[in-house]
Image: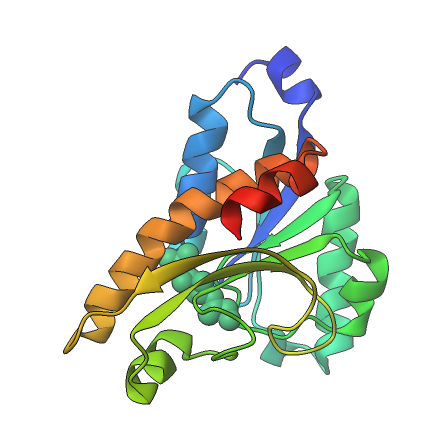
Length: 207
Ligand code: GAR
């Protein structure tokens, strides 16, 4: 991307712990869409060996990937993360499969500036195993939620939700794939609306 294009874009950091398909989608949109309002300047991970880190490295994006257990506590880990976020001039933190609770250090530095995507219709099925939990509960419908992050586990103001049907006898793998397809559409739409100040106008479409 040429410098001039990058200039008007909002600097974001994507946090990821897993396969990084949502990260990949955001990287692809950034490359493909001239009007896309964000630029991924940093990828943060708590799992240095995860696929999301490899995807970021392949794309030439700066990566901060360290194990929190190598630090005395969460605050010390987040202080290190914060230093890099500031160095990169990050305005928004986008969680994309980041499987850790964000602590006060980052919440206070980025109040209402941390976004999360979650594979259920919150407040149903918060936590790490939302897809498995929905299947175990026998629901006929689950979904995807995008919300601002607060100090709770998958709580915080909901910005958008999309329903996803669950077929009888569906495997976790099949449902996850269906959910991923929805996430890859919804997350860029919400980020675009948020960063271009058109969130309230778009919200009606997602409800
Ligand atoms: C996504 O389905 C995301 O909603 C979920 O992790 C997956 C990451 O997939 N997040 C949570 O469960 C957060 N509580 P990806 O690494 O392929 O983007």
